[in-house]
Amino acid sequence: MVIYCACHNEVSAAKVAKMLMAMGFSRVRPLLRGIDAWREAGFALA
Image (cartoon, one colour):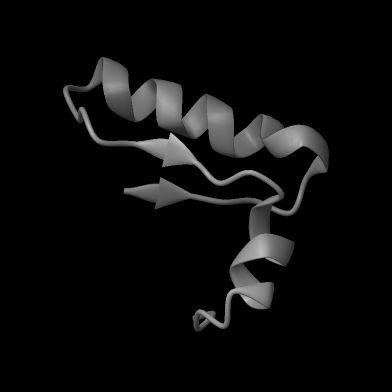
């Protein structure tokens, strides 16, 4: 699961990823450079 946010240094995404891991999810990562990197990679935004 890839978590992304629009904040500086992926702070929110990292917090959510940590919370999900504490809930038992093992394949969770915050996306480096957040939503900007997601857009640049050409992925859709919902």
